[in-house]
Amino acid sequence: MTVSLPLVLVLGLIAWAAIKFLGVRVWIVVVVALFGFLLSRTFLGPVIDSGTRSGVDVVNGTHD
Image (cartoon, rainbow, N blue to C red):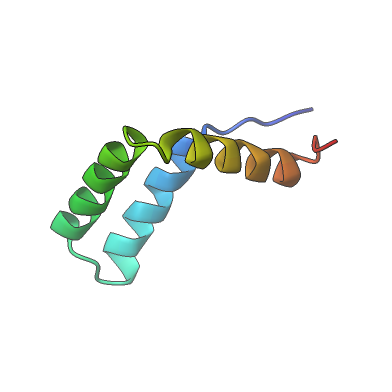
């Protein structure tokens, strides 16, 4: 049996936990998320995507 969780859901849970338990303010989470969207539109977007996919593959054990 395989369980699949979208990366966005996992990151959302981490952001929620940071707000709830670490006392991070909501506006800081929003600013970081917006920075991520802006960063993805630069020349670093493909590098970030490739690195994220490689990391997920390693965690899932599908890395060749």
